[in-house]
Amino acid sequence: MAESNRAVELIDITKSFPGVLANDDVNLSVGVGEIHAIVGENGAGKSTLMKILYGMQPPDSGEIRINGAPAVMKTPKDAIERGIGMVHQHFMLADNLTVLENIVLGSEPTQGVTLDLGEARRRIHELGDQYGMELDPDKRVEYLTIGERQRVEIMKVLYRGARILILDEPTAVLVPQEVEELFSSLKELQAEGVTIIFISHKLDEVLAISDGITVMRGGKTVAAVKPEDVNAHDLAELMVGSELPTPATEASTVTDDVALSVTGLTSLGLGGRPVIEDITFDIHKGEIVGIAGVEGNGQAELVDALLGIRDVSAGSISLPAGPIDSLDTKARRGAGIGIIPEDRHRQGLLLDAPLWENSMLGHQGKKPFAKGPWIDRAGARDFTAEVVERFDVRTPSVDVSAAALSGGNQQKLIVGKEMLLDPDVLVAAHPTRGIDVGAQAAIWDELRDARRQGLAVLLISADLEELIGLSDKLLVLFDGRIVAELDPNDVTPKTLGSYMTGVKVDTP
Image (cartoon, rainbow, N blue to C red; front, side):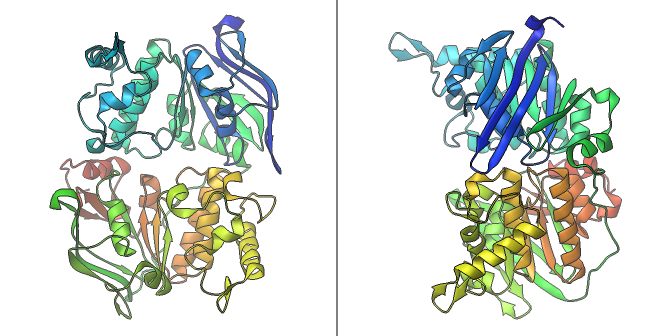
């Protein structure tokens, strides 16, 4: 193919950080109008490569070519000027602003010295019609579904004239119906000549949507393949040297002993409207109870209520020793409740602190992290070293900052330290979000093993295969209420997705 038909060429890109060679002579070639996937383990260098392309980080060496012409990307502004837009995994929207205000923020159209919102509204409608992504420009973002928020993010970059679109884990938080809508929109974009590069860990989706796939491992490009020539097992083997794992359900380990009992739990939000309402369930020792629901339907509020972070207006939470309603968060943690938080950056880590300090968070007043009133640095470092070894956290040292780790290795640190502290009840919110198949399999194995030892788990996940494969019982949360209890042995992801979006379906 002629050089002018290549939208993006990254040639011998190398980038190192202290103790880590993130990209090692990486090469990537993407044709104009192609949907191209980049897959690989966490720490393989995918995100670093895309940040280099988007001007967020400079390469140490190598060349970038856009539409055949050499390009130097010093800042994202340079990338935007060359028609490149990036949609990050964690959306960057202002909830209190409208769709229109979010889209034009930083690129406001003017007529003289005044803001021309009429022109912005016209342009948003035009883009929506052109690419099949209709949005209400005057709707506040806080009232949008996750799928709609993602469309706003994509519309933001299209509004700025992007013809090369980078998507980081675009389906991580979407239910199957929303994934279908996204893929339909991507095909519309492709038909208009837009080039799409996306990072994903969902190999079946990669095979379904992409025209080409680049596989990275250990900071290098190890293969460039066509989806018709490989299957998910082939890709997994290229990525991690092993077959694709599945979260297959094992024989039941559920006991008769209740580890956590929740009765009539209700919590009010703005305006006195319930954000969770009359939530009732038990989790037994040796049981994993899965919570399915489109994000924003009360999952985060339920977790906060269980941990004592959020006030409740009615209901009760009990452990075998008795009610814990009067206990603060620290006391509830001390009573045996572990937590894998939903957002590792906001809730799970101090990014500038070393790994051994991060391992202490939430437990810094007890062994092995403390001796009397003093911090036990040696104990904390030994504990962290055990987490690193058992959970394959890829780091040169327990003294590096959490920010120096890839997202997947940050997640393995959080999961590992909670599991090694041996809780009685584990509240696991999206424990495998944004991590590769190898790390995912390791966490599944740890959860299954802990369940066999009697751990009670509340599992919240947007990965429906994970929910169905790991759970002993599934509860569907919609608009703050439990609307269904399902047997994971008798439900499909599509049926589960229908319950999650409020569609009435026959009992599976």
